[in-house]
Image 1 (cartoon, helix red, strand yellow):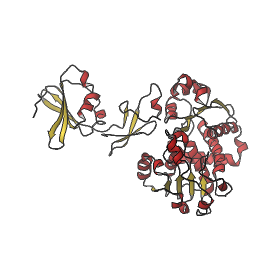
Image 2 (cartoon, helix red, strand yellow):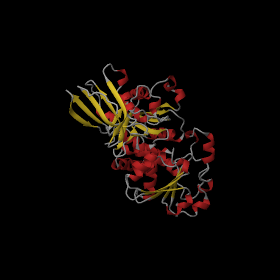
Image 3 (cartoon, rainbow over the protein chains, first blue to last red):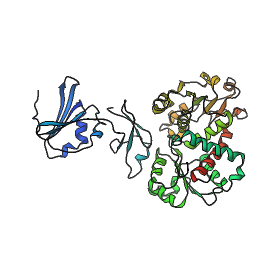
Image 4 (cartoon, chains in turn orange, green):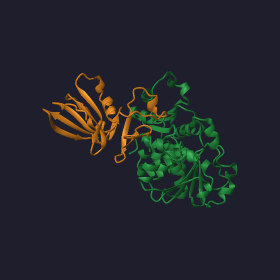
Length: 142
Length: 307
């Protein structure tokens, strides 16, 4: 097994569904930062079989709820002095702006300038969102 | 209180508010002269970004019959849209001149965007294949004026249930009344969108059946709502040609229907209702078109707070 050092201060995003780590990595823009980050893919997991992990050696702040859109099962651990000081479970936000892009070519968002793409949660259990304007469906994890 | 409100989705109004509009519309039908000047001094902005004959004329006639006046455009080419103006900017400008705005737009959600920026009531007169709430009010007024109820009905929707916005809006609206049973008659390619099935019918536990032929259910129906297969909703002409004449309601099929079944159609029709049906007392579609004007009168008067 490959080893990645523990971090002193920062964030560990754990239990990411295998293959989804890169999406979170991209969403957080971690390819552009100058501090240490690690994206570990396909780590063996008793619970999940395989999982991805992201380690960030910096105390960045981001909207945890929006990560839930990419993988609601992932967990966020805040690390201070090598210890986990806070564990955050992700959940689905009621409404998100400019996170999900509406793909319906008939939607007004495809032509209107200066408009935010807004999606509202309509089914928490199935993780279904709808475009505020045209009702286009977006399902989490698909 | 409906004064100052927008109507974008048929669910924007509560059942009580819909009843308020329907009751006023009924009073206007009975005594139009009483309401002939209630909108005197008021202006309606008529913003039609795609061609429409009956909806636009029906709105404009409604405003005029209330004593109001109309400004606007009837196609995007003749407006500032052709210069690239956004919906948000157009509505903010129109709101400086008019008291109420009516918008038809080929893009879904355009009237919703307008309502977010508008200081005057915005009425959705059809947005792409999405919603058409005033057609729904028309349908509800027609049904209630004949059947005297909006619940305990067996309703068949026939034709293009995929892109037919009038059907989507009517299903949503009738799902709020008790004991309605829906029969969804369409070819496989034009079935109801998944969100109507899961988030309206199944979530509200509405009894519904998806069938392929009118004959499969016509005997049971109180209302048969026919729709046209719309050429403009297809990206592929071949698909349109293949599907356009899937359903034709004719005298033979009508023999199997009950004596008081209502045939409704948002119009215009193409081939889906044979002309021989027009004289059948169960054909309500032309009276329905007239109801459309009255219900728009009721709606405009309510949103402007003049009645």
